Length: 322
Image (cartoon, rainbow, N blue to C red; front, side, top):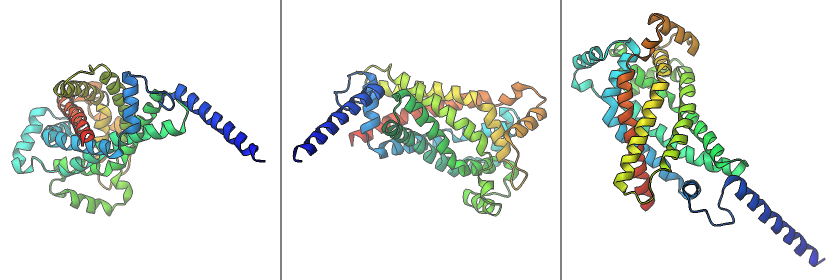
């Protein structure tokens, strides 16, 4: 009787060791052996050991810097998307409205982007660790699904994007004066009105986040280990700028559809396909017109995502040192 528990305990211990070794072989997790000193193990260590709040805080801080710098340019792009007008006409509209209204509507994107990027970066890290812990799959597969989930989860913040669209549309200028007023008035039309345009945002966020994180980490592996902080910031800016501008251009027509859907209040809810057909027909059934404003959008995305990626990397490294 006294020896049986020892036998069972020894057997369980051997099984545990075997499971850990299998897990280590399949998912590249440094469970039993010391981590292999390469870039892959460095990324994995960052995923498994860093505190949650670092990713969330770094994402929010990067978004704040970005919005303050790029909001006026984004406002011009919005006018072009909505009214299919050229850049000089959109700028003239804003000049007539005056400098006082230049940052009108900045609060929704500020709150939305700070919350959104906080969720995007924070949940990507957290989802990766959850998937690794519960599903036997490769690290690259875990990261891909984590990116899709983080981008899709970010869509819970659609109401901020919705309010921003209404405040930036000059046709609603007299009806809506500020963020809180828009939220109060939309409440009278039901919860669904807050989430008008949800479908194109889901179609945009999930895939774009998956591509962004996958390519971003591949590019980070190319950075020399002995690179200075200034060199890392520069490389982060360039990689973020190229990635963000490319993805923003690819999904630009979807943003045009989203903008049209969100410019309506208390009207019929239309599908993405129906809205696309309406906009496409209005623009003479020319695919090129669906990209009107894309040049300025590309330039804005270069600056915006360069700032986001560089600011995020800098804040992350600084917070890890705290």
